[in-house]
Image 1 (cartoon, rainbow, N blue to C red):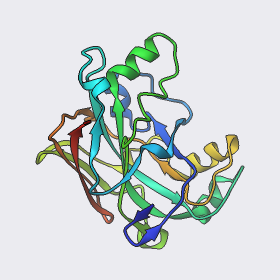
Image 2 (image 1 turned 120 degrees about the horizontal axis):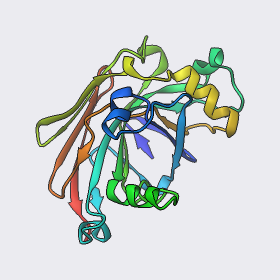
Image 3 (image 1 turned 90 degrees about the vertical axis):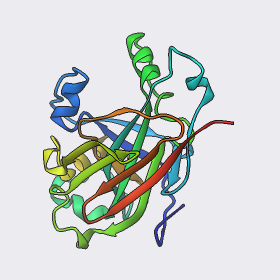
Length: 223
């Protein structure tokens, strides 16, 4: 897919859960002692400006009809790596982008309460947005001091700064690569701050990160 002027072909999206203390608190979950990660599949990935499709299987089922927004700083890998050290982490990063993680929240909670994997709540088509560009590594001196915000229909819902990440990028890269091989163009989404909440068909979502820009996506109901 094309992000701005850059073509990428990722094999996976690795997402970090509960990487901001206030986000963990808003869901009454423990503050993690080590990074928590899960993987999203490529079928879920769309670009800036594309529509986020709200599945009818969720919309028409009261048990599952809450879908949430989560804005995150993303990094894109420049080359394949495995078992890298934190000191070498930035040698493997092509650049940064904005990532919007969409979650079928009621479905996630339902599956979690039954001790089932919550894979399906994260991987509906269009449930991952990236853009509007990839800002090269050298153009952002400190990725851990960027204002991050999300608005729905012009109303601010999430507003924070990447300095509040619990686990910084070098630690995340070292930890993830100790378990699995990261390929060139793979995406790592570094977690969302507090303020996550529901979206509805017809909503316009604007997600922005300082020095990267803004993505805008409309939510539409599945045909």
